Length: 363
Image (cartoon, rainbow, N blue to C red; front, side):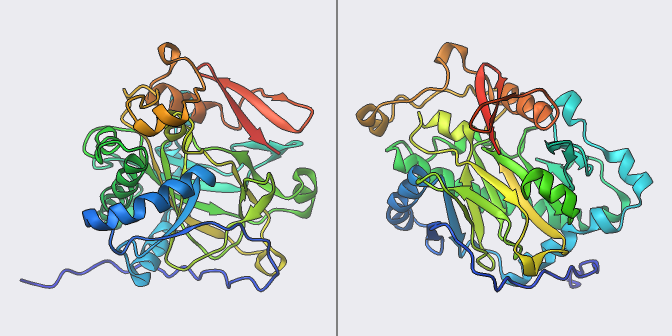
């Protein structure tokens, strides 16, 4: 058989690592080397349970992709931003405000951040299962690799995390996996995100915040770690701390849907993006993110048959009879974020009501 060739792609030069003194969060590091065996999962389940209950965040290493494969995907992630003309990009603008979906481009200055300042973040999203989605011409040669990367995230990383979270609740391993199908039209998507430097005036007006503190709306978010130190989480002591870059690792956080499924046992962690340290300013920040959602028609109600929840109790955000489906909640969150009226509380927290639930953004 002839050798399979892959199309050439321009290399994205990553930002040099920072040498600044940083107050890092103690994000637990989870080694996935043996997650493919029942014995390995049994050993990892308590670690993941404690990480996601205490922090709602963890860092995964030995996830199955090499550093070279990781870098190749970063190079591909840059294609929609550098190789597609603006007039062609305009044909693929997502209908987030109208339809609550992320498919295609989110342009810069789409969201309001604070004090009249709009964001400088550009996205390109591929929605699972992606095979029917139209893409810009420059990205089309790389679609087999994009699809393969999505499958790796879904089956080799996400599903294993979901199994470990189910074990942590003493539920059957496949409990959450069965709510996250890949080959049906769904909500889960891969996002290429590029952050551009901002003016000094914008930094002052927003107090250096690039994306306000928030929780994700889905179940599990996978952020492939990149060198620009700008992500912060609110740690259990109520302080903002940076997440350290670990080469070829995945930062994992739980979202609102997982917190609701687990009756408050697993925490949807508050996180934000801020101006990078001095020696990383002036560079772009390019990221790979896989946002997982339960199947569209799944109701966001607790797993009351969990022996763990029966022992520790259940915290509900809304009564079960009033709980939204994953489709309802995710669509409303997407359409409203950065584009709707909020109530500013005295402590600086912005509040919105989404599908009967209170959603907060932290300034």
